[in-house]
Image (cartoon, rainbow, N blue to C red; front, side, top):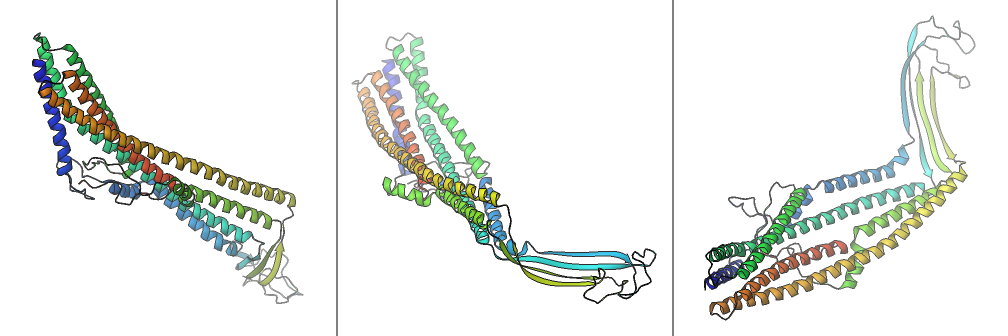
Length: 474
């Protein structure tokens, strides 16, 4: 009867802790505030949306993408303005030269009067070329710059979506670890005390103490210990990931049981259609196609001449040199310049430019084929993510039912053993089955939530409202 007392105590203790823990979570929990006050011995609790916001404000990859966007916008401004000013230049010079006096027909100085007094010579010259018609090259450059800005915006969106998925995945892992740790705490102490008591009875050669019951209890305790090690490893990994993503030194999640997320619309055809509309990857390929098209237009323009307006204006003054005002005599020391002309420039590298046109057209075909390939890949990704969600949802429902049934089994076994109608083996088996089903259920809940996050990333738009990723503790 000593074994009966030990197993009965184990049953009542475990049954009581299980019912009390579930009742306490259902009655005493409260909605999680966004930034609750810190616990006396731990960091402040952060809910999922708060951690996502912190990650978006801290993560260096987003800062890098934002900087790349600013660079692309500056390049677009350059493409719009620079062609009209790139050909402009201004030169200012100051030198000295020997004096030279005389008229256009007579002077006492020789051609290089080095013995004369040296005086300053200053000059200023401005010249430039303003394109008038480039046969599509300027427009192609603007289109390519616009495509670069669009690509930078989409890369920022892509990085933000990936960051949100990573934070949610790590957070759901942390929730799973906390739920498992809570579950283990409920049964581990009772199992160890029961094993210790049974060891005492076996050492006293109590005829009612069976070594087989000891094996069963030890196996159950070892399984619980293994689950505890897995939970600790998952908690450490999840916390490390959240710290790296958010920049926080310490993180604590609200002690709320996980609940599976439910999608309001889970129709696969709608998701497949939306993937092509909202995914940044599709937009990136379309931006690449636009840039390649601009490359073809620029290559076509290279086969034609540039039409531009050229101008030049300048003045050279040498106070020590006689100013010869005859327009037919070149006076290097005193010379005003003012000229404008309509010019055309045409590169005669026709073979090379033709080859570049063929290359640009081939690159455009490559971009279009890549869009088709990406569309197929996105459809497959959405289908796989949707299938993973449905699979996780079915397993969560099955394990939820298994948890409910094994809990009934455990309660019935404990009550039956209390009146002598149940063997110790049946009670231990019910206990192990209940904790196994409970662990599998919370793991399935985490897989459901992670699958929803993966499906939202695959579709390219939010599938859950901002406050719906983490139901309040009620």
